[in-house]
Image (cartoon, rainbow, N blue to C red):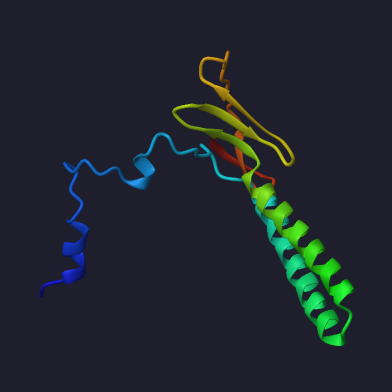
Length: 134
C-alpha cells in the first residue's frame, strides 16, 4: 500500500546543499534546556497575565479606559518578564558565547573567551536527586 506522505520526506536528501534549521551554525542556541522551576515560574506569570488581561477587558467594558490601559501595560510587562525568564542563560553559536540575563545581555566572541568549564553534577528533576550524572 503506497504511503504518499513518506515520499515527501525524501525530497530533502543528505546530499542536498540546503542547510536545515538545526544545521545553521550562525544561529544562537542554548546547549541545555531551561530548568523545570523556571518553566513553572514562567507559566505562572503567563497565567497571572491572562487574569490581568481579563480584568482589563472587564474594566474597559465598565467604561474606565484609564484603568484598562494600566492593566494592559501591567499585563504586557508580566508577559515580557515571563518570556525573558525563559531566555535567560548561556547561548552559543559560531560567533561566540552570549550570556542572557533578565535585564542585560552580554556577547563575547570566541577570541575573548578564556575558559569554558563544565561541572559533573547529579541530574535533578524538580529538585529531586537522581542517579544519572549529567
